[in-house]
Image 1 (cartoon, rainbow, N blue to C red):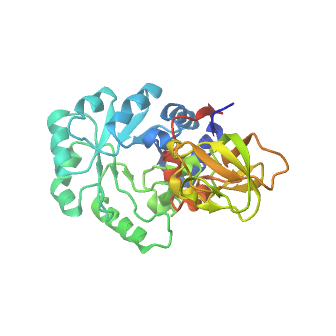
Image 2: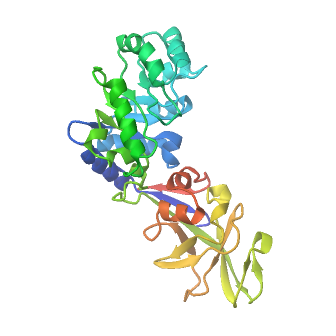
Length: 344
């Protein structure tokens, strides 16, 4: 077929959730982060697979994601990281979302517009991104707790590095801000789960680890991506390939042009750095990534390939991210809409 194929292994996804749930411990519930269209893989099929695995609480980033998730999972608890933004009251109510309020302004907006509608709280323990700071929380705490929030949470800035002292500092601040409250607490996402039980509290929120990414090194790969070869040409020594003539053949070469590019989320920075695979054989990406096409050196292959693999058993999302100078999150969430998607 003439289109690139993105395959999502829903069984591997469910296994990853079960493994992270086991690491979270018997006394801790495990949610699932499905923001950004389930990290680019499709919120409806991914959320249903996670529900079947046992997840009951799902986290999204913005209210616009709530309708699709609610349609897929009528009974799930949907928690909204962006809280209660101006103009979101109708969407929050319609999809029965739980906004995680992160400022005095949002507290006021929520109580004035939605009254008794459920909510949660985000606290800033040092990341300086979202959440009530300690002084704000101290001023609002009694009033907020009287309204019985569903969850009080914060987010770790450096959990990918277990040795970073920031982890311990944030843990201490979270204890100072929340010890003694009778509300479920959450601090750990994927990286925090790996830091140990003292970071788990009542609920963990795995995200990238569900989808096969670091720092959950034991994750099963979830995504495979292959693209068809459009044309193969012979390039003589000294000739160039691609925009800007950024690759020059040292010797005669056979170059395959592959149907995928930065319009499909294969970011331009991986040009002349990444590899594709034919089975277990690596094939260097040569020249720049263009909007719709890649050029790949297949001189060493005995036969002309019909397709080449971008993601698969030989190369995961973090391997490709390293070649592009980025992180697995960006690789996943950049995947474009032109792929033929298979859910297995």
